[in-house]
Image 1 (cartoon, rainbow, N blue to C red):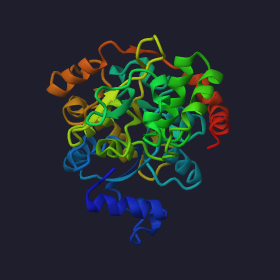
Image 2 (tube, one colour):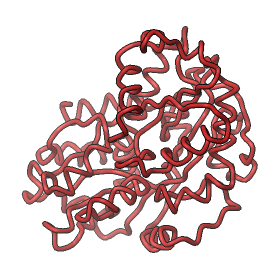
Image 3 (cartoon, rainbow, N blue to C red):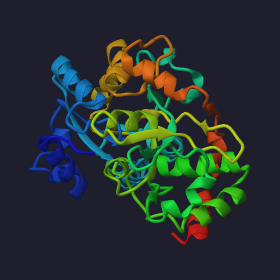
Length: 350
């Protein structure tokens, strides 16, 4: 997602080469830096997102500068895997099931941030390797200007109205893209049924996208009518994208469904500045930052004891009314994710 020029320059440098190549300065040589690899969605379009605020406040309070790199959840995990022998990141933030995948690959080390005891057991690792910092839910977006009303079912998306006007991010690369597959498996009652549907949907699908965050602007402009996303990111985007509406697909005759898709954070094993990473995680879960999640970020606090009452929190509660929330079997998904993705690729010829 768009960032200010300084952050963008840092990110491009980081993506192009190891930190040691960035202007000749290694992250390990600067004790006042912490490097974050994150799924997109929490940084604002105009420097007004939750990350923008807390990174600025964190640096003001500690003197520690945040170097930030973003991409799809799977992309960030894959990068950390490649760098495992010489880690460049200190903190990794991804959506499920990629945070579980990072854990299973030994990328995360145990650390319990201050305030983690206020996070529900379902939103953190039992072994202390990661914890949610922003709660969130999977969803879809549609263009409110070109569609009189939001679609309500998966079957509607097979209509010719959506030919080359529908796109979802790539499962296995993007967290929200993987969520499309997870939700379809739940709604259609099994993997085979879900893949049969997604195979049909492919005739309307524009094609792959590594980043979910890039789809909402296309929907707002009318280049697409429908795309996948998540509530936090899309709600925040809707502040500057007036044609963006959020909805939750249902199986024909069923109730709209979704599931929690939190931004989960953990410390990278042998990260160059783990102590600074610990301080950042503590700050992320602190009361001040958590109270800003809805007001600034358009998301849901990860802490159960933080009850937001701002206008965004009220609107988000209304948005979720009547939507059935299910809990995926993340252990099973982590175990079988590779085969699920391969089966999806086969079914859709992707």
